[in-house]
Amino acid sequence: MLRYSFELAVHGLRRFPKSTVLVVLTAALGLAACMTTLTLLHVLSADPLPGRSQNLYLAWVDTVLAKPSNAGADAMALNGIKTHNYHDIKLADAQALLSAHRAVRQAVVADMIADEVSDDGRHAQSQQVILATTSDFIPMFGVALRYGRDWTGAEDIARTPVAVIDTDLAQKLFGTPDVVGRSVRLEHTLFRVVGVIQPYAPQPHFYALSGGAYSSDDGEKLYVPYTAALDAGLAPFASDGCDASFKWDINTDIDPAHCAALGLWVQLDTPQQVSAYRTYLQNYVEQQKELGGFGKPPRAQLTGVADWLQQNDVVPDSARLNVWLAGSFLLLCMVNVAGLLSARFLRRSGDVGIRRALGAPRRAVFLQHVLESGLACLVGGALALPLTLLGLWILRQQSNDFSGLAHLDPTMFGALFALALAVGVLVGLLPAWRMSRVEPGLQVKGE
Image (cartoon, rainbow, N blue to C red; front, side, top):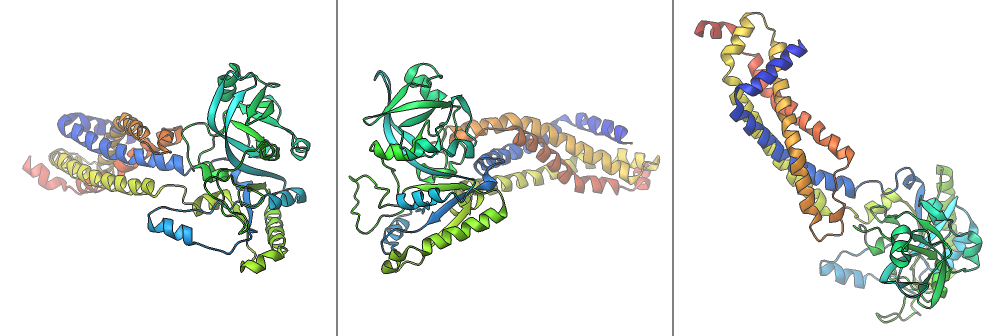
């Protein structure tokens, strides 16, 4: 019966080509608008490190020796500027927490800006973002090495000026990707390249949000030990706050010794490890007796990747709003398609009445018309594919940081046709049910 109903559905689509084209176009427009916005939201809300992020946590303690103040944030909020606290910590806290070795792996992270110059001085990249971190970062965050090695914990402690570079930057500075043993000059210090990695840019850029949540380029291309970076005169370009004794202004570099400017990410593989580390953080900050003189309660927090992204509203509100608007447009298209299908089906009431008189059951009539609706919307889904790709191309021309990420992946490709089929079934239910209720007697009498 299914095969026969399918053949009848195909015949029904061919019988009235003009209305079929109208149904297909209407469905395609609604599906394309919805899938364009859904694809962008899917990309922006995706897990940045599948298989790893569930074990990564941002560790934070507030030991800034200054009275709590929201005056600056309140003033920015009144001007429509959204402010965030990125839960950075001071240098002494980072060193103390690293030395305790309470996590499976742990990595300090801080974005810094510097000119990157090849050792022969012939090539340079001006004002590039550099990731100052520790030796655990590469294995902890799943960065893929191509040549050489990552640096060791001993080199962290010795403050050795070594570096890991990605293949794109190596090609620009040296003309070849395998540059192990060469050096890159940062300020007045030569950093010896010990490893070369594949370009690495998880989206969103969760481990250092101060540099922006999304980026259409390949992120940081040079990694160095944070201790060696500080020795070379580099400084973080963002801070959550500084000690009252440190007088910072726009012309002064941020000093991690007095400013919360370093992020600390830890890897914890079990709930027991998470609980133990959270307790350790709270005990650590409660030992900071100097905080009492500034009226600050001891504050510590251990935050997973998903919660961290949610706290910082990483996914833009406009992306969600666009999905709702496109969904409303798809709903309007579905109502129109349902009306067109009803008109199409009612023109065949006589044929259906004769089938019913010859013994066709109601379920066969219902199935035929649902299949016809589903096929029409599947064709609409095929037409919606190039329209969706066009919509994503238009998005990529926008100036937003995340616009360049708007690409259709295999998951959303499958979702397009799944949505098309679901729309076809839904819009066909009522018209198909009405056709299945046609009484055979009146139609046969009329004939």
